[in-house]
Image (tube, rainbow, N blue to C red; front, side, top):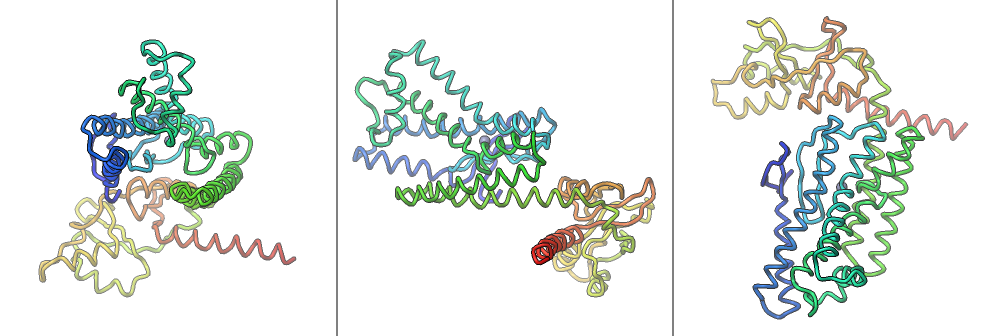
Length: 392
Ligand SMILES: [Zn+2]
């Protein structure tokens, strides 16, 4: 992701930090100065420690998602941490409702586990009375009473209570049933157990939008800009999730054979990119298979864009050959497979074109432009179909 840099790798999953995370520290310094009128090193120490702990709790939450997903064979591309929370970018969502349920709820469950551990520590080992417990948490999370450290709480206790409150907030906020929050996915998974996935997503998505509007209105009414912004963000993501599932559905209902282009241009690996460039204006294709003359087989693909780029960067008369600029990952798909299989394959392998086979014989190609074109046309067809129905 743009603006984020890799800081570590745990369980084989890269963890990236968004630069805006640094703003939190500036904010802490500002608040400390604003409240106390000076930079007390001790207060700054505890506040910085607290911010780092927020970071750690969000990270553990995301690993809850990522490691549960791994259990179901779903890879996590990376985990990105930003001030508004973390994202574990899963390669895909498991489609079995029960699996999606566990992946989604694993995050909030991690926060729950942290609460249980810290509470047990405070109640069993700390010097806090059981009867005071909830009052103290309230004191810590309630901004009005946030006077940093009250007399009868040690800074360490205050810190622990802050963490309990923080994890409660993380769990509750994420359980709001609206995409892209975990609650939205949990809700969809529960609905999917009874309903078709598309319908379940539509209901979950609409519920999310209602919640988002409520959140935005509440934010406006109370003058809380951040709540309003979260509302707007949740609203647009809820709609996007529905569009995404609808797209998946369309891709699932068509077969590769419905789209395959049997008449396609092959480029030979030894040809010069400069020569090909002259032919490009006459071609409707944007992606081409590359044939290796020595190996006598297809070894990769190139795009119009790659050829343009290569000739632009080259110094005449030394233009690279097609074989030198080709991408060597060329996925294959059976013509009987659903279009979605081909689409997922392209995404996973980073290929814009796939080889279409019938048993062992190559019968044609399928490329990204064709899939996009198909999606655009099916959206149009669906609208048209709805209209005729309404008119008749
Ligand atoms: Zn989560």
